[in-house]
Image (cartoon, rainbow, N blue to C red; front, side, top):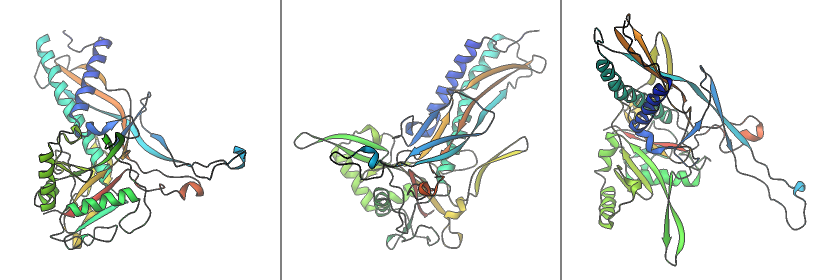
Length: 383
C-alpha cells in the first residue's frame, strides 16, 4: 500500500516555515507587529509550546524620586520603580485539512493537495489571528471618544449619548490625539499617555535633528465614508497631495491628519475580520463542544436606546501583546486506509490588549494600573 505522508522531519520543518511566513504576510496586522516596545503589537518569543496556560509579561513604570545632589550617597534617596504585569492566555493554536478526493493515486496528486494547503491553511490562520487581535483590541476600552455632531465630541467617557448624525470628524480625531498626548480620558480623569506608533526623523532649519510623532486610527466603512464627506479632511488630503507626500508610513492608508495616519478596513462579518459595530455581541469559537470566548461587550458601545455605532481603533506603541513561539509545526498523516492525506499545523500563540496591573497598593496607585496602555477607541453613529 502506498503512503503519501511526508516523513522527513527536515522537509516538514521547511513546510512549517513556509506556512509561518505566508500566514504572517497574509495577516492584516502584520505591518504593525514587531518585537520592539515601540511596535503597535509587541511580540514576545517563547521557546516552549504548552498545552495551555498563561504567559506573564511585565511593564516597568517610570522611575520616581528626586535623586541625589552634590556629595549625597545614592542609598540616601534611591529612586523607586514599580513593575506591573499582565497575564496573556497562551495555547496551542492549529488547524488541519484532509484531501477530498476519494483516493490519492499518485505522488503528483498528493503534492497538488499539499501545495493547496500552503495557501488555504495560511489564509485560515491569518483570518483567525486577525479576528482575535481586532476583537480583543476593541473590547472594554478605558479611553473613549464619543462623536457629537453639535460639539465634535461628547464630554463623557461613554457612548450612550450617540445618536443619528453623530459622525466621525477631523475634530474628533484631534480630540483623541490630544487626550493620548495629555494622558486624560473622556471624563477628564488621568489615563496613561499613549506613546506614538511611529517616529519619523526630520531635519529642521539649522540642521536640527527632530522627530514627528504618528499615531494610527483604523476605521470601518462607515467612518471612512464620513471622513470623505468632511470638508476639513478633504482639504488636508488635497494639501498632502500637493506636497507630493511619498512617506512609506502612509502606504495603503486612507490619509493622514495632524500626525494621525488613518487606515480603512471592511466591517466585521461572519467570515472576515474587520472593524466592529455595536450590534455584534461577542466573538467566540466552538470546537468539539468546547467554546472559547475571545471578547464580549461590543454592544456596550451602542448609543441612545441601542443606536448602532462603529468602533474605530486609535493605536500607539504597545497597544497589544503577542506571545508566540518560533513558528508552525507541520504534520502529515495517511487517512482512510491510506487513500487520503491529512495536513495539519500548530503553534503556541496568545494575544491580549496591553492592560497592565499592579499587585501592591503602591503599584495599584500607578496611572497605568488596570487601564488600556497603548489604545483607545473613537465611536460614532454607523450610518
